[in-house]
Amino acid sequence: MECMFSHWLNDRLQLRSLQLTDANELFALTDQNRQHLRRWLPWLDRTTSAADTRTFIRNTLDQFGDTGGMVAAICYDGAIAGVIGYNHIDWTNHVGYIGYWLSATHQGQGIMTSACQYFVDYSFGTLILNRIVILCATHNKRSRAIPQRLGFRHEGTAREAEWLYDHFVDHEIYALLRRHWEI
Ligand SMILES: CC(C)(COP(=O)(O)OP(=O)(O)OC[C@H]1O[C@@H](n2cnc3c(N)ncnc32)[C@H](O)[C@@H]1OP(=O)(O)O)[C@@H](O)C(=O)NCCC(=O)NCCS
Image (cartoon, rainbow, N blue to C red; front, side, top):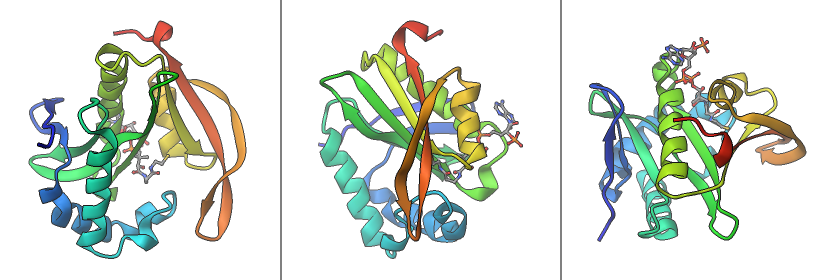
């Protein structure tokens, strides 16, 4: 039984759990945004069919089971506009690592900032995590602006932390602690 979650951020914007039945729509969006996403995300070249997207969704459902960890579709007027979720939750240490992407045409409206704010509240309020981490490539200004807007602290730089197809990028580490969380 797949765990269903749905939350409306406003009358047009919904976060809901990704389901296997989303594979075709999500792959089509990924394919349309291949160049846009490939600049900063490492999995585009191994996502070449809806079956690959289905495997990704299956893996996230298996990874989190009924723990409350999740990967959510960001839906705008009923259509998937992007994805936000935990790349990983370190349950032993109560740390969640959040990742996200948005289609190029949905950028610039604050959609990801509000989706991420929801995940912050959910992480601390429901999952009772103690620390949330967002890792952004140094030159990914749009991505860095999100934790900056939400009051995360810049803790430092992890040098050459990620291989992106043909080069390494440094990661800027942003984190928010439960005791600095403001509802
Ligand atoms: C990273 C990414 C999600 C950021 O998208 P984004 O649209 O810039 O982020 P938001 O949805 O929060 O929107 C912020 C923008 O909307 C504007 N905005 C409008 N209303 C707003 C509101 N109510 N609240 C916040 N911002 C608002 C902001 O000014 C900002 O625009 P600007 O960059 O022109 O100043 C997107 O660029 C992306 O998917 N990139 C490729 C994949 C990627 O890099 N993923 C992250 C890997 S770490």
